[in-house]
Amino acid sequence: QEFVTVLVRDPRTHKEDSWHSYIDYEIFIHTNSMCFTRKTSCVRRRFREFVWLRQRLQSNAVLIQLPDLPSKTPFFNMNNPHHVDHRRQGLQEFLEKILQDALLLSDSRLHLFLQTQLSPEDMEACVSGQTKYTVADAIHKFASLNRRFPIEDEEGKKGKNDTDSDSESSSSGLGPSDDSISCGCKASPASEES
Image 1 (cartoon, rainbow, N blue to C red):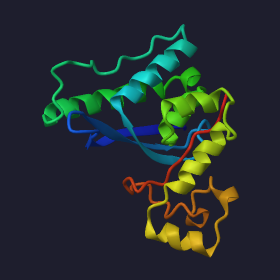
Image 2 (image 1 turned 135 degrees about the horizontal axis):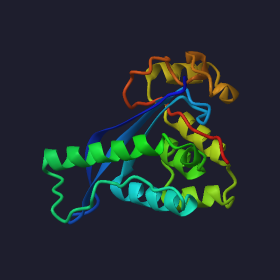
Image 3 (image 1 turned 90 degrees about the vertical axis):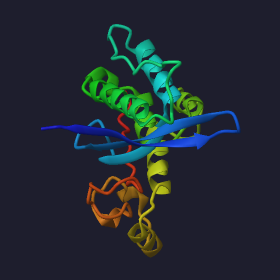
């Protein structure tokens, strides 16, 4: 039986300048779904990127009523742990619902959003064929750049084999296959494009 587990966790505040800050959230995916090339992945996204994703998914699947994102309230206080956690839960529920819809799962933007750190502009360029890399290339590239465990570095020095990158074993250079490891994440892309 296929499953897709998604966790939105670890909110972090970033200062853009002396007046502006934002929070981003870690998105962790673990799946055995055939829609995903990589079975685990971990990326960080901010709220406005979720807004972009929802708009793009809605414009490509006009007959589907997409779930709502947590409301963007003028009273949101990033120093209030309750506000931050409420938004985190809402973002997780949004992704859980989206990942249950086969039509939405076929959208390449969703896979790039979940399994690369490409910006919305770069995701659009990739999906519309304006880049030298495909969706699958972008996901594989992100996975190879996102190796943070010492064992991965050692194995990478012994001999990288990027053709093995979908393997769940540690010989893929993606580290041990213990999926409970938090985000130093073995990035796992989803590359079935439709």
